Image (cartoon, rainbow, N blue to C red; front, side, top):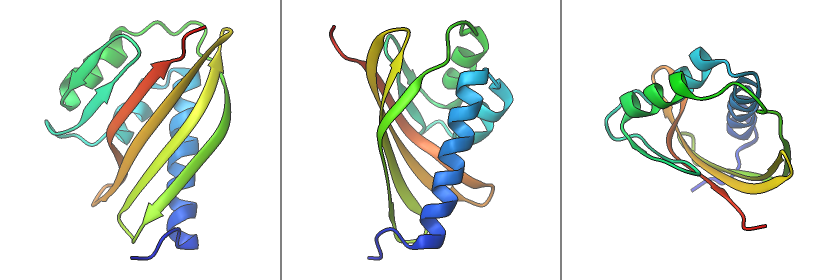
Length: 123
């Protein structure tokens, strides 16, 4: 198993950065694009559990576009071989601290999030 092949790490880092830019600008089309369009995709949010691409896309449509700016810290992206990766980060938004993890998979359409988790830390 090849860990963090430079070209694969660069691809996943670019996908992660594209996701983050879409998240803070509420670019729903890009957010939807970057999740794997499958009933197997899961997103556990700070206040919701979403099973399947359709549930995740519906959540994105109804999410408030206000106060989305955040600061990331301690981001760790690790690739495993050519087709699988994880991205973990801590964030601060509106004075609240949280964590985010994503599992990425290479698909014929490009890198897609297949599983995600977001949680807030107790103040």
